[in-house]
Image (cartoon, rainbow, N blue to C red; front, side, top):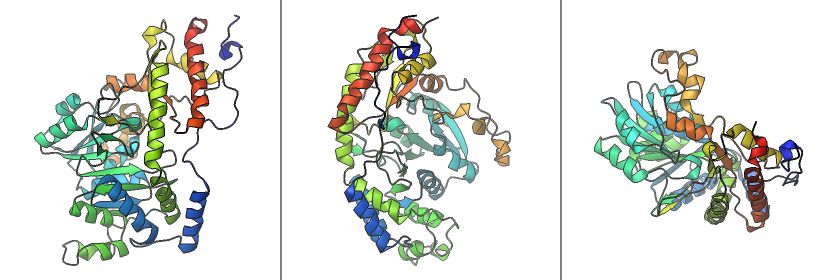
Length: 417
């Protein structure tokens, strides 16, 4: 076959061999911040120095009372759940479509995660949430997939109506907001990741936000034992007796990671503005192509665009499988077009089908199966995720990706048969 498609022997659109996307942006200012902290100290046991500065700035940025830094987003989730009193016998409604670390800390606490399907945005569906509530439900956890805020007003209304705790996993969504209210401030507490590619990156790290003093004290006791607890828990508080040991876990962030995050936080809104411009540009151009469905944001919603999740519409390209479409894009040089793997409907993972192998206490408790959450599975199966560049000088590369998509959609019939 004489086809222009690179997968079939033609010339690829993109031949650039350097990185197509890297994160976070690091420069001399970052280097100075890290080296300065290296000389100041590489272990901080209390709330002082770069730890105090970063926590204070996170509180100011989000308009909350307390922030506690952690070693990872997973650790932040674990501490948040423990601090909110989730334990054996408690059902916690969680999104079926999320990264598994949203839910795995609940297994370590003995709580029962109850999966709920997603809406067309990929986020927790308020209608399905309402159907999952029982007398044992204690909390609802909301994820903001790929940095697109979930339907928080509706979700919060349901949680409030039933007297449930509302908790956020905002690991993808730093700086995203709904009508000016930042993600991470809608519920009793929120957990964020600052893992390498997140919009706010520390390399590795995370944090918990809350306005609740009791949650704050228990977050400290869960993973910040001894000096922080002795310094920050009131001496007349009933929990002060446990300040030295806490719960025996150490989830402190490394000071060098905190220095990177502090440097990045100062630039976050600038990055988000650039990403918003790129996302709008990509969506406008890609929406013209058959087989590609771009995300649409409701009025008043600002995403952080951790990634740009496109939906592949198989019915528009004569049944061409998404796998073949993706393969053709990769051949055209679109190295950063991703079909997410481990971020998937949890019902597809062995841990949520047969948890008793690793968690014996969950024998006969969880037994999810493929097909249980059709919306989540359809969205996952057809998601093609693009990076969202923030710099004007990256626009030519974004244009090349658009050209590659157009080339594949213009010649998709060559891929059939």
